[in-house]
Length: 81
Image 1 (cartoon, rainbow, N blue to C red):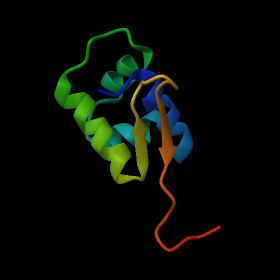
Image 2 (cartoon, helix red, strand yellow):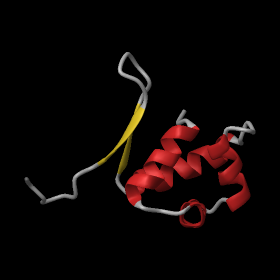
Image 3 (cartoon, rainbow, N blue to C red):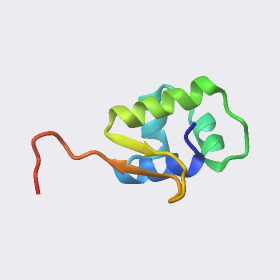
Image 4 (cartoon, rainbow, N blue to C red):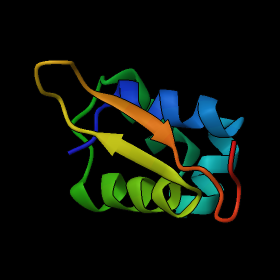
């Protein structure tokens, strides 16, 4: 499951406000704010909706392992460096 830090980092990568993410995930702003603060054990359906919205926007979630948890933004298709 994704963590509050990953959600905040993913939002930052996308340049989204909490309100934008809440709208895209179709969850309440209060639920998202509480989840990001880690002060409440949110419903699984809320976390899944947030993860789905962020993934759809191009965010990959990196699981916590020896290097630690993280997020990254997928390169848009057709773009090369």
